Length: 357
Ligand code: SAM
Ligand code: SF4
Image (cartoon, rainbow, N blue to C red; front, top):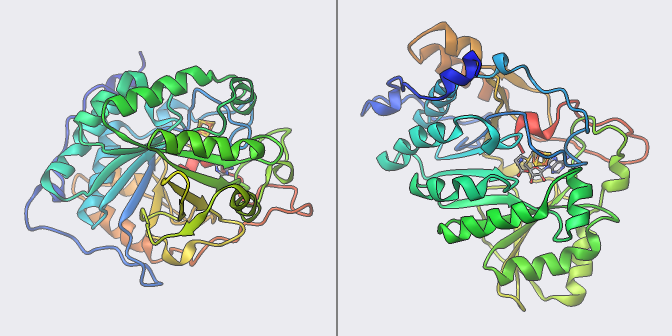
């Protein structure tokens, strides 16, 4: 066990402004009048899988010593809660492979109890859910996103490079048995799972789970794979699905970029996240924190601010609040992703697992 691991095992929680009644700093409003109320936190860049659209097979991960400790992540998240963030999503990499991550959930759950936070949640590949689902539910997590692109075990192994579909299905069973509401996220991949989307939809809805489809985004070097070969516009998927299902536009929103339709035949909801065919930035309410304390104002832009230095500079949160305010002043209007044959390189060098998908 190294020094980081030892520190990670227990959170000796510092008192933050959110713990002291009546001392709320200013809320976060960006230059385009969008209130920032949603923080996604990549608690680790590591993962037990290597999905072909997300990572190269031989990824170099951050040295453990570069990671913020769980205490520091707690303090940063709590500073955002004090500044009006109402929803926290833990992601990664695979959030449930970070050692001691449940102590972070446990500590952050105090903001649910105090009413300062509406939702504490996570996006996971599901492999560790048999171990953690019940504890997550006990800590106040209500809904989770599980990423699953196929129900075919061989395809699953090919997409994730070595994953075992059975483990993920067990994880979903455990989550539902614990009373967690599960939403399935699937990346639409040309020639890989496009033929399977109708059955994935029927399966998810049959188990009372919403399904959200995501267009592949040009983030990070993925080795030999080519985005243009993976990219499948959801406008096409929707047209094909309409031949089999009746899709009715509905107003339902989760505070995220997905637009939802109701599938008349199943009664379930289908979400569509279309960063490429339809830009979703105008209503963006979120920022993203990496496991090293870098705040990204947009998934698809380079604008970033270092919060680790102000965090470590002082035991009080004032320098941190000032750095957060300054960062939000630079939140860009939106991204400009494009995938075509002329753009052979990723739009951005960093992987989704760094910024937190
Ligand atoms: N490991 C967890 C998981 O897979 O759910 C959380 C992190 S993962 C980066 C979050 C989401 O990002 C997953 O649903 C994954 O499918 C998606 N993702 C990763 N790389 C992507 C890319 N290049 N384009 C679109 N979605 C991507
Ligand atoms: Fe891991 Fe999630 Fe990326 Fe797949 S999408 S490699 S599970 S971080």
